[in-house]
Image 1 (cartoon, rainbow, N blue to C red):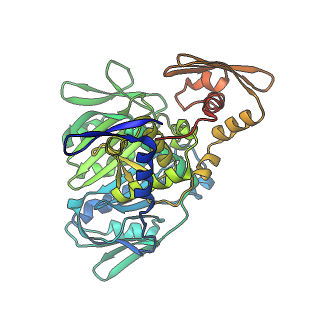
Image 2: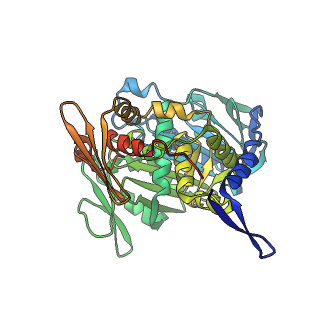
Image 3: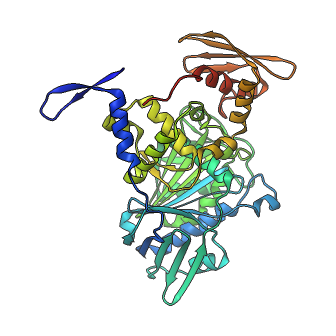
Length: 453
């Protein structure tokens, strides 16, 4: 049995069995009780209601926009996810095509009220709410309530209540992917208000079908159709116009890009309010279909561990995998796997400024997430039907033959690189997650292995 060296405050050390540490962790967090009966999560004043109103109207416009769906498909989707926790309020949403993600964060300095409980709800901002937000004047006092079943806006003697609605399954898939992309993004630029407005004034007109690149010449940022060194690639540049109504109110803007350019994120700062805006690689690619969480769905993880880590995140209202591993003497690789699983279930969002995940209370099960990912389901079928043959399985190189329709595909996995001879891999080269053949090989190799932190 593996043992871990633990140093005590006295300076002495002792060896502790790893299963004992795991048992202590599971016992500690499995006993946490979630207050699921609290009717209200937050009640209080917003210190900058006019700015918040502009942000929420912009968020609603993003949710109503689509860059590749029909009007019928647009009518099927809903509005913001609202989370109260860690002394913050967060409003999140996707465009109907799920290729644009946006979040409004109201930081502690922007709120004056009471957080009665941590929780999340999903409401539909109808026209009365949009009208009420649009009528808010600078320095006007408003109150906001966020509860289990509704969100309320109160100004003078008027009030608007929006009731809870079902959360679209497509949004759950998108939430998992976009948070993984955010956690893998790096800050590339910081622009002041004047630089940001100059940048947007130089944006090309109409629908932009080709890639554009963000470059800085001297002190001036510009969008260019020509790629050069150290640029940020942006697909579907015209989607950034959704941010234009907020530009008069910002203090600054920061630009983040994914390590493999699979997304760009534009974060606007307005005092104690932030607006986070992420674009998928191209207009027609929604975050829900990118497959960023598929790798984390390969290993089998017990319900006991999922429950304990879920309650850990609930108790702390944040989730830093590295800190968790260090504080609880857990494996870095396995905490990364758990992070991906919780993100895939919609339970974790990512805060770029805090460099850590935050917690959402969404009643979503992992089994449904797997059902929503056809590549995982198809990989399971390949294994069940005996169509995967492992030819070589050592640390440096793994090779397998996978039976397809009238053809056999070869899968090779070497260190951090993987290849497959199928059309999916040839087309995307792994940019949209692994193909079903690679998933099947990885899952078969892990068969029989147990998840142990």
